[in-house]
Amino acid sequence: MKNTKFNYTSLIILHIVIAFVVFALPFLSKIYAFLIPVIGAFFVFKNKNKNNEVLYVSAYLVGAEVFLRMTGGNFNNEYVKYLVVFFMLCGIIFKNFSKSAFIFSFFLILLLPAVLITTETASFDIDIRKILVFNLSGPFCLAICATYMINRKIIFNDLQNVLKSIGFPIITTTIYLFLYTPSIKEVVTGTQSNFETSGGFGPNQVSTILGLGIFVFFSQLILFSKTKKDIFINGGLLIFISYRGIVTFSRGGVFTAIAMIICLFAVVYYLSNARGKSKFIVVFALTGLMSIGIWTYSSLQTNGLIEKRYANKDARGRDKKDHLGGREEVMNAEINLFLNNPIFGVGAGMSKYERVEELGQEVASHSEITRLGAEHGVFGVLAFLILFFTPIVSYINNKQHLYFLSFFIFWILTINHAAMRIAAPAFVYALCLLSVQIKIAEETEN
Image (cartoon, one colour):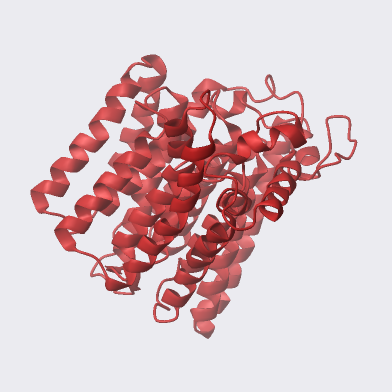
């Protein structure tokens, strides 16, 4: 799965073309969604996962998920999560797994009591299977990914290739967004999350995946760009993806990308020698200038509304009462549900219906942490603690994992503003658990 420079450029061009083709012929999105697992399975089974092919295929699916959703390519809402689980299980069969993975079996067991409560208490007009799949597919996907990846050895260059596999379909997503709304000024009229600038799909999820793309191509730019051509390509992709991420008017993904980049800066600076640190300051300054440029252009294109959005103001410049787009009310309601049902919770997927009395409407949770407490009670709290501390303990003997902090912060921030609607937080969480070895290749793949 290693890419030469020629292949890297060719793959970028290919994914730009895919965006144009699907935009012109939308039905081809279904064909694209079908071909990804078919081609992926061919390589996995042909090589019996000798080179961790399941990681690359799963990473590609994670990067493509939002594009498939916004273009109607998904065969069902959890399509990508199912496929990621399938490929991870294939990887486990071919290459076994670490004994440390038992902790994630225990994690899944902790979720079972709430499932039993739901099956016993849900009314007849509620589709139990649907709500269980919606609420548990994310945690289940995470557990299977983590089972495969924990303590699995991988060299740093190969990990970067996994990130590039995520990044290629994000290029497709970004180009599609430009085709969908070529003129930002015409569709931005307020400071709320904007569906028009998000390809007609959920701005929160689009912002999340573009934020991940920002980190992918930022790391590619500062760590793997050895020529002027590399710098131009990766810098250009970073600028385009950052701009489209900002103008979704959904702040979560952008803030998460910034946090990931800060973490990477901190780790690289800490590990650099004196000469490296002096060069690092130059990189930091250039990154700051690039950020100012992207922000200024975004402000001009939105007539200053993006500045009001990030200042938590409405279009008239008045301060908004809430800071999280109404999520505070949902989170407070879930905390109250936990306090009233501290042992077993209200049942998996049932908090949405229990909140009706307090909020007057059915609102899906945006925070996986408060949802776990509300629906699973103390078992959910224990489940979250397992997820939180396992990567930290793993990192003690895994200090060569330069991306650990960035991946961990992506997971914790994303599940707090976008829950686990898409597979990205589950997969990136599991990437924290890989045993990464810094190995200088004869020629850095790009």
